[in-house]
Image 1 (cartoon, rainbow, N blue to C red):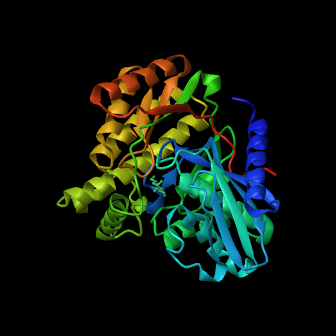
Image 2: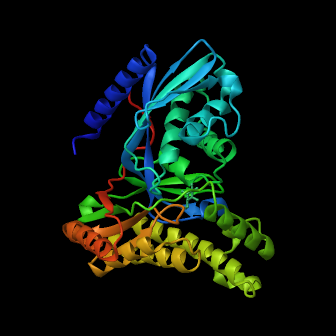
Length: 389
Ligand code: GLA
């Protein structure tokens, strides 16, 4: 890969040109926001718990310019080429729908300052529907653009909230703050340790290359969607478990001995046990990385996380399980599904010189099982959202 700077410049140029062609005027700037892969800490964010994501090298770029006719125009280089256009004062939850709802929700959050209207063109290389936060990359690129253009007093944490509200209140996807925080707060060479209750962050150094390691992502190509079904169910089950235990959130349960009151409800017990043990796993992984011990030691903890998501949280799939098994059998130190679940990607910690063989073993297993060929790539912990031009 060429250097980030060159990649960023090329991406900014492409978005600027496309914007100018589409709207007959140059944009005021181009902003980029990355997708994320979570090292550990899955479904803990809406339980006031801990997460540890890294930003992907893949980003969504937003070229943005203000208008004077009171309209919002949204175009994507990945779409069929149509422009979604409506008056800023016509924006309402669910309107517009589809991909345009994500950036529109961010504009809606700052509509008082955007009465003159705004044009946006987006371009992305974040895999969509792969559990790698393509939606957060989209909302956060636009949120950072609006910060620079009309809301400079907002902090990055405020922008996390603006982007999250777009997903929760405008699009109707009940996410936590993991994805938006990763996209806006991550820094190159680090994992972001975030306490989602206190909103305390720590940049934990993660130089895998120096240790001869690779963080391999396998996108199984099976898709997930948050707006319907399983994700919302898990959220409700966690809330019920917390209520049953008499605590504000499952974060407040220190260890599994605190779950005795759930012993007659197998489902709630499993959900709560995942959250309690997953928070402990985040702290364990952070401890290993902070002490600069051999990062290989986090591998088994990641695998335990997968087992817990599979058996207790019950959000894995046959493809995700096959991927984890094949990776471990072929020499990976650890592997787990990432993101909301019910499809998407697996993250694998592997020695650099074994990465090719592990990817091959996963592809072989998928071919044998008759699953579609997965896509694999290496993740270098990359910078969070930034202005490109
Ligand atoms: C999705 C949500 C996040 C988080 C993860 C699971 O990515 O958007 O808020 O809950 O699932 O960890």
